[in-house]
Length: 386
Image 1 (spheres, one colour):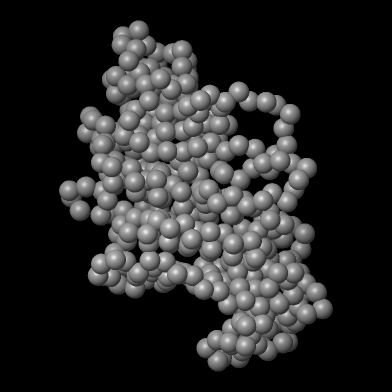
Image 2 (tube, rainbow, N blue to C red; image 1 turned 120 degrees about the horizontal axis):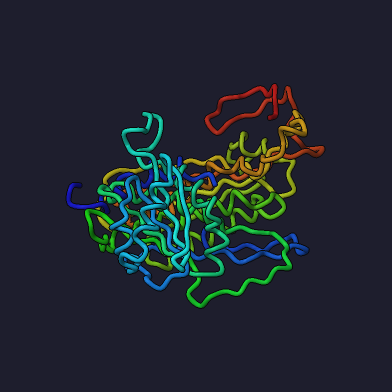
């Protein structure tokens, strides 16, 4: 609606999130790699309050002026020349950094007129790349980082902006390090929005950005987890934890599961067949949400949740198997969209269906030439278990 952003977010969150997320939240699972302890992740928040005492500042926009940056840094003419030099040093889209004495970076995104029809007008992929190049994930752990995103149409782009920033701040880490980091009391990344010469103060907008961000980071964490940690059993636990949290927050959410031989008995031959050789049984997880008021429509989100895909007896080659932990990315995107939509009280009934399996090998594995019966009753002859 012309009056503001929140309605736009509610209408688009389901369409945007699954496609933007294939790549973390605060439902931490145990790390099975005990020789490489988990490291700390940067906190991320969205607030209309600009932190004028931060250790690091990042200004983002498709068009940036020295005036808008200097006014926020409160450094007056003393740093204007430096800021203007920074901006002029960027040839087209790019970034530049200086110290005033706090670290100050500017990220200039492509102008809308220079975007092809296949790209988003705000170039969120470029924003993620730039923030990763500025080592935002490590900076946000040790010190306070303030990001200010400036645009005359900021209300239209808060969802992709929140998504892009979140993708630069992964929650999952399993690196061992002997380097100790001194963490400031106010460490973390805070994001504020600026539109039409003033700070955006709409609380609903920031609430929407937070919900989207939590979904993106949760999905990214699931996608980053190795198969020794994320399997149908542990993935199911993640789903139950999310459902429990949403219910405790007062949302009308239910969750049911069909597991192992029950899938076969109920006719789900496809899901059961793919996962019948794995150490953990296949699962069909169904979550539903019913809004408090009138539901405008009923939307179903269906996500592929192959936690690891070896190819089965049609085994993938060594160069084709690495990265197959991401074969559950579709389900993670749908789960994150469900979580965000419920948090934002979307006025639509939602049903989330996740098929959680691992395509593995043992004496019970599905074979080429086998015939399975799908839930629809249709029989399918297998000629490639991959």
